[in-house]
Amino acid sequence: MTYLSARDIAEMSSEGRRRRLKELQEEMLQLRAQQSLGGSVSNPGSYKQVRRTIARLKTAMTAEKKE
Image 1 (tube, rainbow, N blue to C red):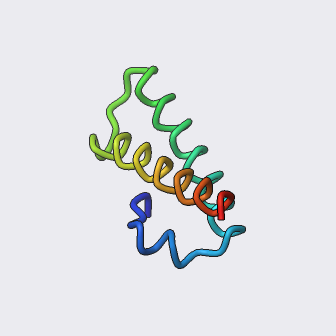
Image 2: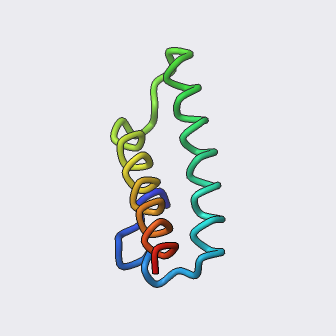
């Protein structure tokens, strides 16, 4: 599951966020590799979805540090 809502992220522990961020970054790497090799992605919107979810996670992690 690549999409995480803000509510899901808020309910996660900080360790869970870090783990999920790492997983999503690896998924993004795979999507970039598929794109660069000219292969078709099974879900064309998945690249955008993963990118935005990573941004949501990073925002939540930064807000947690400030508190």
